[in-house]
Image (cartoon, rainbow, N blue to C red):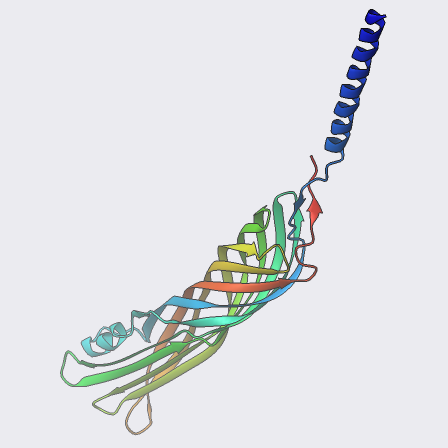
Length: 269
């Protein structure tokens, strides 16, 4: 009887332990998978920051001159503008995430207040003086870019690049002590390229996200020709071909609102 009671007790203990272990396994098997953030979706937002540029200014006399005075005028117009200014505007885009990789497109239009000017009076080698007043400016920039990034939950690190457009303006005025003048100006819509990188973070896992972005843009060069005119308004048969280009760097912060923002996905293990 004692042996039978021992066997029955042992069997019951094993059954209880087995049942508890099985129940624990069942709980672990049905534990919900962790929820991760997804960047898939479209968004709109605003941005603001600063910009600085390099604008190389060139001038060539037509026909080519070798006399000291004309060469002095030509050489005085070969230099670099270094404009700086504020930039700010809005953007719209869409992302698609697969695994940790995110691809997307984004377009923006921004105020781009780059401005620089130069006004100098210089001596002629043969005596007398001449004055040159130049200026360049831009008011806006638009881009259409692709984005490719790597997501770490609600953080996104990305590279971006594509088309950039702006309107480049340039004005030139010349006058010397003999009364000779020259005026030239252009306002040219320039199509170029842009590339950069950034980081974006979703705020609290919701639809809002903040970003910090760097862009470099190159708009190539534009040119215009100006005629020299004497004090009586008669062309002298001598002109100057003026050219100016623009490259700019931009650092800006932004805020985006994603439609259906932060829609969770279940991680698969």
